[in-house]
Length: 82
Image (tube, rainbow, N blue to C red; front, top):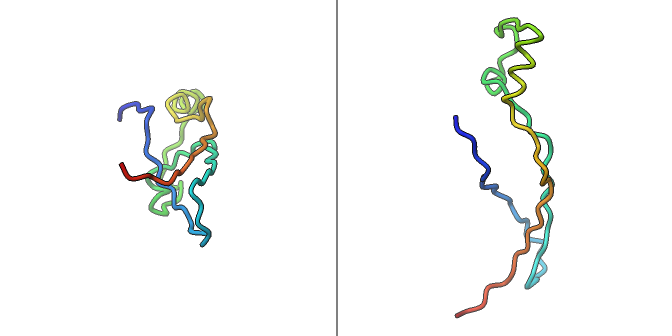
């Protein structure tokens, strides 16, 4: 699994039934949550092997973390014909 600094976020814009040429909204990013494969499928942690404190610290070093930029302002503008 490689490192990536670029991701595409799909954001559903809800139509508020009011036409606006320009619309601005903000996206706030929170701390990432790492899910175990078993947790995705509803499995409990019963099948997870016991891990020592040192091993757990090393494992956390490879986990994703929130960076410096946590807020994104998006401006949606009406396009004009060329």
